[in-house]
Image 1 (tube, one colour):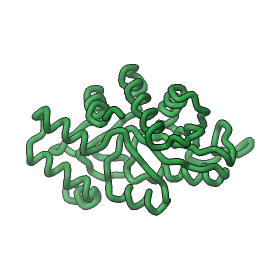
Image 2 (spheres, rainbow, N blue to C red):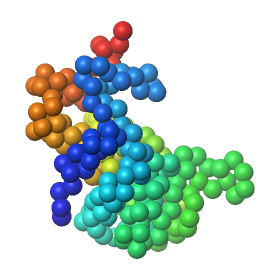
Image 3 (cartoon, rainbow, N blue to C red):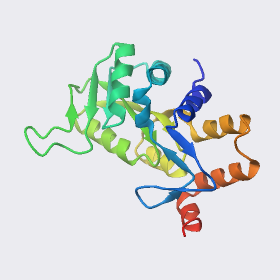
Image 4 (cartoon, helix red, strand yellow):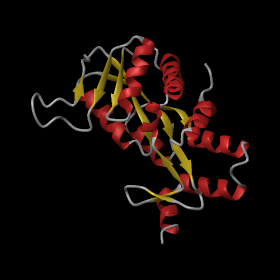
Length: 214
């Protein structure tokens, strides 16, 4: 299989879907301070980047989850990528809402899956895994199997490993925080001091945020 990690990491940096600012932290919607900001929704506007991502995710499905019979997109950012991957693999596609609709049939999963299906769920980003694991629960409540979860990018936070293990769910990102730092280090963009700051954040985001809040 082609190693997409560094190529995808570079593509995300090139279109500024991912930005690193170790000395001028971003403030996330949660209020946490972070040296990284990610908006992978931007990828849908760049045909070459989205094709790279779709082909990479499709290869991951074939390599790791050959038993998959359907591709599921996690609303909302995972939906377009799931559609492109399903097209590459010629598989059925569904998408999973964050919660059931409050009208009509009250469906949380749009599309059609059965108890015989093995679904690979796709999201754009994994931080702690909370939203995508909610989608995993929804698919399992329908009686279908979840083969595993894929994402474009992962922060590689320890909390995600803990949460996926607790949910007995396999997870693989197309590219990672470590790959992103390697690309920037090779390009000479980050100093050793910057790299240390970025690694400290990954190991304990809450403590890092508290230390860098005004």
